[in-house]
Image (cartoon, helix red, strand yellow):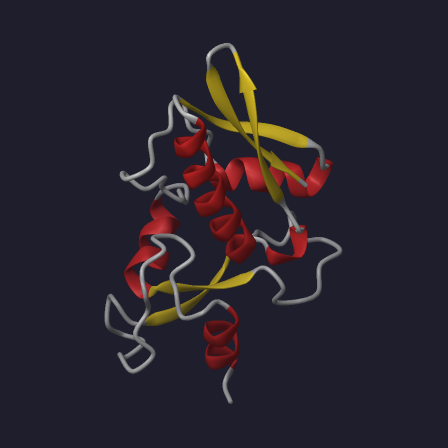
Length: 148
């Protein structure tokens, strides 16, 4: 089994950037084909095992990330206000621990939907972090909290 297959199996054959399925049968030269992305720079990954930050990405997503900062988008079906940038927040929590407010939601149901999605997304983005999500009521709204 190849390194690409190992990383693809670990990541469930989903692109860590766009969260869409990656077809393992496509050529690595195809824009929608699989590629391995080193998510963290060498400076940020000190103390981690070699390859621990590698994630599966579509070739096009990986190439585009080289030109602009990587962004994990919040899906349009979630009702969130002032969503925090996921990658930046996850990297900060990995370094410092603690908790961060990720978004505000108008209803508890919206907040729970967003918390479920965020827990799954962060669990695949940084499985070693062991992050949890919480919903807190406050000021007539519901806060979505990510804790490391």
